[in-house]
Length: 138
Image 1 (cartoon, helix red, strand yellow):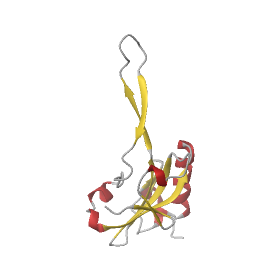
Image 2 (cartoon, helix red, strand yellow):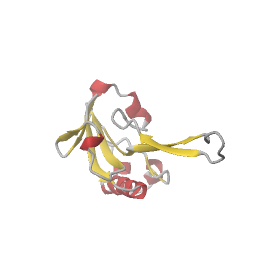
Image 3 (cartoon, helix red, strand yellow):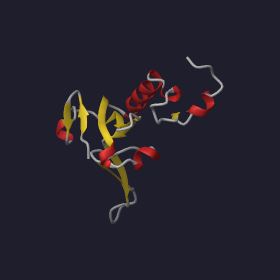
Image 4 (cartoon, one colour):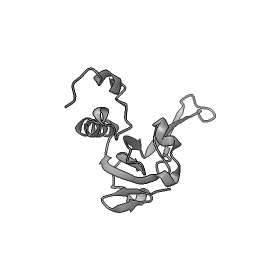
């Protein structure tokens, strides 16, 4: 699989991640020149049953499968590994809210809903490509 790259350097483990980062904004590109922008958390929280003799469920934080992550997009998930030419980390985020903000900022700035080269079809599940069909081209 194509490695994640940030500012020209490969990111191969948590040792290569800036201290305090909880996730990143990424750009995945394929051989046909199609792109997808998304966000990925470095950690996930799992709820475990309570220990014997206690009532409270346990929350355990563990590393997500970010190294091998492709995307949440159905089309990108179907791409074979050899079709992916780049997996670029655009920005590091330091809180979950920061992660969402950076993703929205990138999507709106690059005008992905009006572009034919981006596969993103919505932003936050509120702004959809199909909603913009009535607008004139910019």
